[in-house]
Image (cartoon, rainbow, N blue to C red):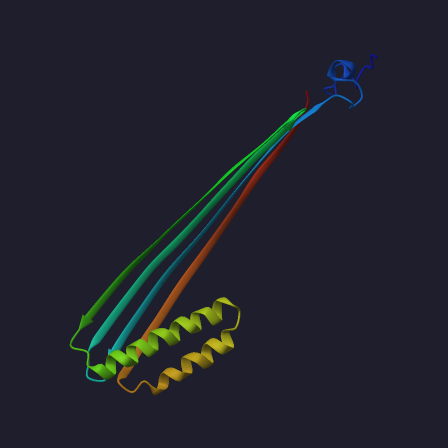
Length: 165
């Protein structure tokens, strides 16, 4: 069988390529994914008697995955790999001497702030504000500031190749 392809369209001789699509095909595909999350948190506290506490957290998490596969008449192949890494850097600075009540109030503040951050991440800022309002009862703390910034990057890429064998 001989069929002439479209002139100038990149087709040469359809018959030489296996006719009209009945030839065995080879297919290959590959996909990669990468997700990275970075968070930076700073807490500054001043107690009623003037002690100062600074806490800084830097956290990052990276997840990467890839998969590739292919098939040809009588054969199939698939391979993949994943990797994950994470890091956490913590810095704590205390000026003065913290008594037992200040330590307990500091613990309550940190737990409350962490819960408020989760609320905000889940899209419920109103609950985060209500939660943080509870810190008004922490009598040994004169003032505090809490800041947390988080970023997330997700990358996906892939390709599929199909050819007449």
